[in-house]
Image 1 (cartoon, rainbow, N blue to C red):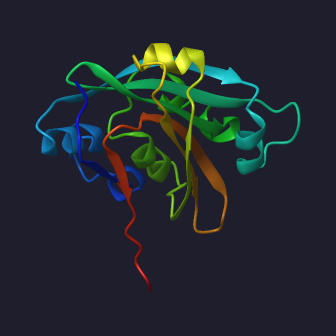
Image 2: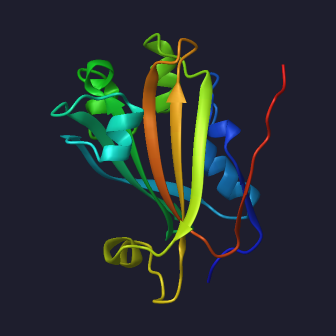
Length: 180
């Protein structure tokens, strides 16, 4: 069974959390009457995909850190999220450890002096890869939404690229932009 009429808003995911505020995914899932959890699949230093290398301004041959997660709604897989970080920011921090990050990655980046101030997102619909189809338990005719988010500092320094693959059925993305 899929959740229908799901509207996701990015803002809670791109600002540091205050104190021990619940994680955005748990809060979002609760508003839809379920329990949102995540399973950490991998933390590794990798050669980045070309899109990630370009966004992080990584020169050829420079590795980055990736944190791969499976997002679950009532224990059903609904999203794969791979978050990439420049090694000079991530190595030796909780980002590089194979465990949950207290307060979340965005809060940790802010504590390390790399507070994200701008989020740029690209969204597209596409057919899932065979691996994505299996991990997300998709039927052969189902598509996914692919969202790529780049977080940069006030000075325009890239600090995180997240590539999310979401179950598309019933999902709507909402963007709220503050005009200064």
